[in-house]
Length: 421
Image (cartoon, rainbow, N blue to C red):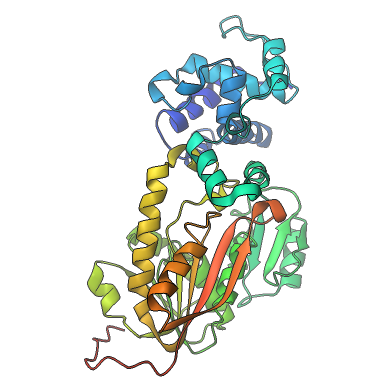
């Protein structure tokens, strides 16, 4: 495969943006494409694949390039010359010849391939940080090796059909007319899988609000809350609103959904998506402090807590996250999750239900959080069901959810809380 020199130059610059500039890979790719609107599909594909695969396997390719392992996360040691060597290791391992360039660093293919055969420590071979290897072994034991390997398998593209505007059969036909072949996902009634990876955001069917791009495992969370038309529902960590939109579809656009988040820009995106989807029961409200939460005490029959988490269950989609995370950050997140569960659970009316959910594979972020909450509030709450999906068992991402029932006939507060709805 002949590689144009200008394309390789852009690859090296982009990798520097990711590992030295600490920018996210998808944003770097998006920005580069905007600067090079005349690139054809081939150049775009080579560029995006090079970035994502080098990011996904960064530590492994750094090792294959013969560079000191201790320096693979040190920005001051990640020079353009070293970036070229890492990319060269990726290119060679994938069976390609390096482009002829007398000015480029000299790399021997035989050296790269020999190191690949010699083997390396599990964390290096799996291209993960040491702290993640240690935490995975500690929390997941014998299940960790298979999970570790699955985190580097590129994820499929799934869609959630917007049942307010069409059904799965109609969407398949429409996408087929636009040149995209899909297949039904068993046990996920709202899901389709794209047979060949492609960017769907420019399609007419997407612009018409007929679907959202959403992993199949993520599509299990909204139904797990068991929402019903006409109910008052709170999505308390709504983000961009993917699950809030799914809830609205399940409720047939009847009732009320209050979507909360601390980031106003995410809620602005939710409003755009809701308009495109034909949803008008969602109110997006920024969390401005503890008073926002307190005023919603016992205001909802259903509450979804899709809490901030490590995202280790979706590393296949966001491979650069593992290089930006740390053990200390996960400890911070687990403390925040416990705080959110403790505080936001008060929004549920007696007899109502709450779902605690993450896109993590770690028990410390998942079932242990629920166990600790029930140990403290078991007289008021009961666990109805848990849901787990992990990447090594199939094509889905890693997700966890627990549905809790707030026991009915609890003593209501003597003081009426302010209804800001």
